[in-house]
Length: 180
Image 1 (cartoon, helix red, strand yellow):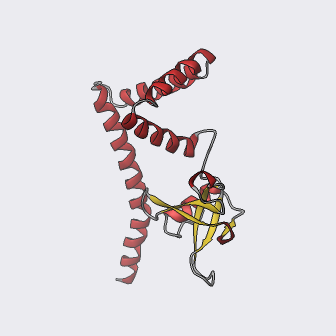
Image 2: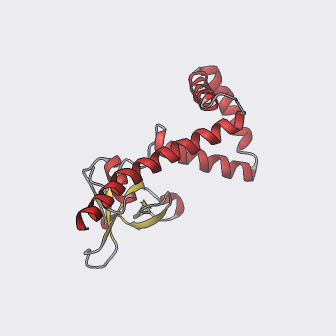
Image 3: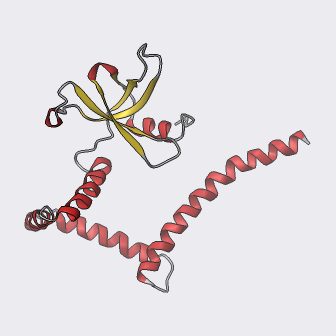
């Protein structure tokens, strides 16, 4: 009976991540396809991918950059629209833009004796603009979640890590169980 139980759990270890991944990919495909209502499965995903590539290609043109600056200046005059647009734009830039923000993993001491520490990513080294000259901003992702918190801490509580950002993020998001 022990052997059967072990086989069952080993099967779970193989199947659950695989099925969950396939299911998430399937849901993304179905949601994107439902936008276009094509009869060919996956056609909507292909159209979306090609549209993103085309917009990226066109936006690399100098004339298009001026058009984008005009659009952004218009958006910046609309209070609610500006807040939403800039938040989404900053988030996208943090992951894939030229100003990647999650590329400096750090340890932050959260207890006076420095025995308790959390892992995060330094997102701002200078906070003079908000009246905190001796503080830094650190983003603390949450495990098993796509959320996190920004904490403001003294610079001396932060220790840079010499580790790959992707591996550190995987370690945090997995609750510390990711092995690679």
